[in-house]
Image (cartoon, rainbow, N blue to C red):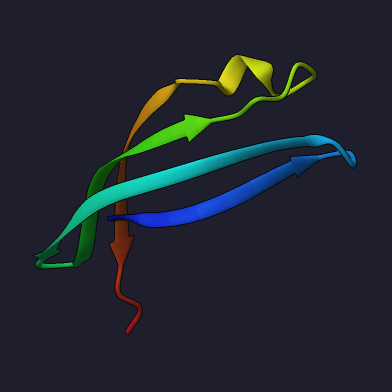
Length: 64
């Protein structure tokens, strides 16, 4: 199971996201690649996120 997060909009809008990813060391730092899965029963501002799947890639350079 991946990392879970909760996002809120006002007092009633709530989305749960679950993410999975892999990390790879690079010569300059670290590269992250993965997915995020979103779920909500909200009918308000966050409703569009229900059953949405997102992809990400992030490079983090080490500071010397």
